[in-house]
Amino acid sequence: DISNKEIIIAPPFTLLAKSRHLIDKYSLPVKLSSQNVSSFPEGAYTGEISAKQVREFAYYTIVGHSERKRYLHESESEIENKIKEAKEVGLVVIQCIQDENSQLHKDADIIAFEPPNAISTFGVGEADDPKDIERVFSKLSEELSGRTILYGGSVDEKNVKSYSQIQTCGGFLIGGASLEAESFIELLSQW
Image (cartoon, rainbow, N blue to C red; front, side, top):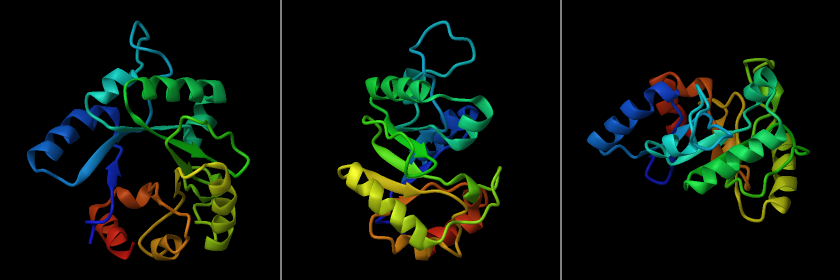
C-alpha cells in the first residue's frame, strides 16, 4: 500500500520533462526531484541547470550527495549556494550528509543520512545496522527541530522493514533498488 507514502523519483536531467509529462498524463502518485541543481542563478553558466529550470519540472532537488562531494569536490559553500538558489524558486531541498558531524544547512528541508560505506559506488555497499542508524538519527533529530530525516545506503526490499522501525526515520533515499521496477515495488510493499 503506497497511499500513506510520498514517492519522489529523481531521474537524470535529460528525463525530467518526459517524467513530468508521464506523471501528469497518468495522474501518477509520484513527485519529481532533480539529482542536483546549479549553485549559480540563471544566466551564462554553460552546462549548468539552474534552480529555475529545475522548477519547471520538479518540486524537489538533492544537494550534497556523497558522490558529488567525492568526485566533483563540492564544498559546503557550494552546497549552501545550491540550497539558496533552490529555495528562491520554491524547491524543497534534500541535503545529503555522510555522518552525524556533517554540516547541517539551516535552509535544507529534508536531511538524508547516507554513510559512504553503505553506498555501493565506493563503499562496501552494505547497509548500516539499524541500531547504529538509530543512534545517529537520535542525535540529528535533536539538532533538526522537526525536519524529516531519511536514510540512504543499500536500502532494499530485504532490510527496509527494519529501518522503517526507527522512530525518527522519515523515509528513505533509495539508490540501486529503485532502478529495477520489480525490486522497487517489492521494497515499497515491505515498507
